[in-house]
Length: 144
Ligand SMILES: [Zn+2]
Image 1 (cartoon, rainbow, N blue to C red):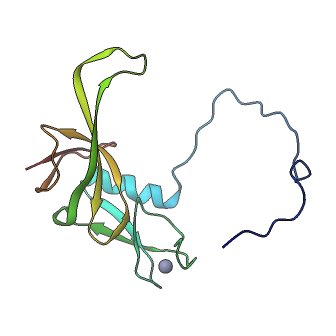
Image 2: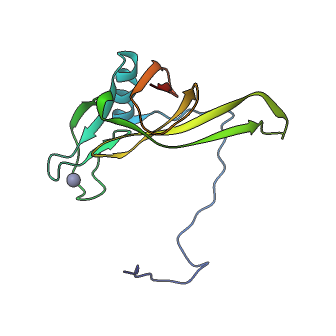
Image 3: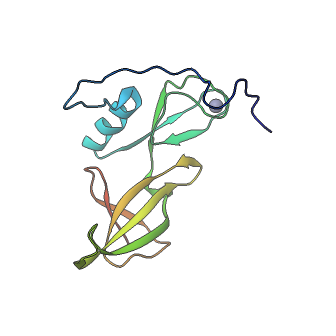
């Protein structure tokens, strides 16, 4: 499949302006609000499309598959969570060796689209039961 395009590169709509802002903040949006409120209650919240049934994490307000507005939020069960992949970081942004390596993992749930990056505590390994030790974002998890 290809996208139909009109016009030539350089002739596309554009405008010039000056943005006078020294500091600005993005809101997390309505789905983000539900997600972060859920974390405060030690819950991981996704959103579910009522038309096709897809569940998204982090939650979103439109289904990318059928373009339906999503208004249902669901609590995901840690029993369905698994560590999809992980990496270990040995150096900081400046290339200096860290005192302790940091493990970052992608936490996913069975039947759910998307996932969350988390800090991994202990020795990272795939498989095993997920335990969340800290629901502040980013989550801290360990694998039992
Ligand atoms: Zn859908």
